[in-house]
Image (cartoon, rainbow, N blue to C red; front, side):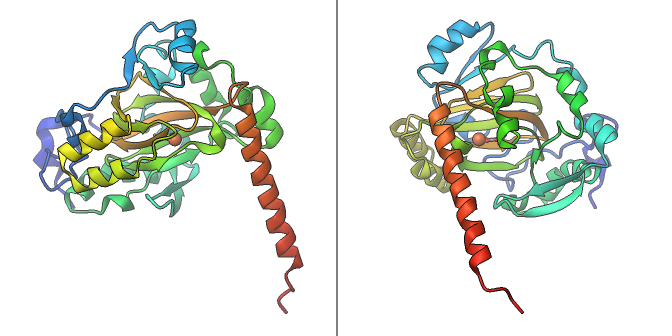
Length: 312
Ligand SMILES: O=C(O)CCC(=O)C(=O)O
Ligand SMILES: [Fe+2]
């Protein structure tokens, strides 16, 4: 057990344990309070972060050319902006069963209350040398069937209003494309492209997350390897070659990720965010193609299974 009184000086809230001070043994990608991360320190090209971006300007400068951007002031009117904290969700929905998974998407089922308590203890676990790939991340709490009232606490900014999935396609194919994410400090979503050729907008409500992105035609493995190796110059060279962009999003930010952009995301402290994936005329062909192939695969699997001789 760690002694909370040791860290009394930087207490965050009475109910929440304070973070321990930064420590050299923590990962280079990780910070505790106020310190630059390894990537921030390098001065990589940044995703633009804009206030007052009109939907029209968004369309012209970012959506059509498929360029990521951060809207810094698009959730000012949301009740969720102030209301949603980990403690609030724990209090209201602590009894929900959730699935928290590690970096390899293997995990455990537990109650939301247990998970929030776990998130609070992770900074100490990290200090004690917990391997970061084992950190449990709640990635896919599909909340809106169980708790439709949570939808009243946020709304779709007009920039992302053309969303055929939200307007019925999602219901038709029987899949949700909106999730709440809760993660401890250090939780990682590894490099990937989003499912089925969708675009995404992700809203940061609590804590900061560090993002690194590369365009669809620039596979990020060499950059990932350079970061693993930890040599700043190599990282900068690879980032330039791959046209990578970096950003640390803070509470109040919404990041737009165009279809097929590669990205990896790390929580710099306990985080809470909402992910929405969407499709419209711009990417519906690719979305439908993915959906069709997935359907065929499932059908084939079912046919193969039913063709197997039954065990006696
Ligand atoms: O916030 C994160 O950890 C990444 C989320 C993400 O990229 C996704 O949901 O596809
Ligand atoms: Fe993603």
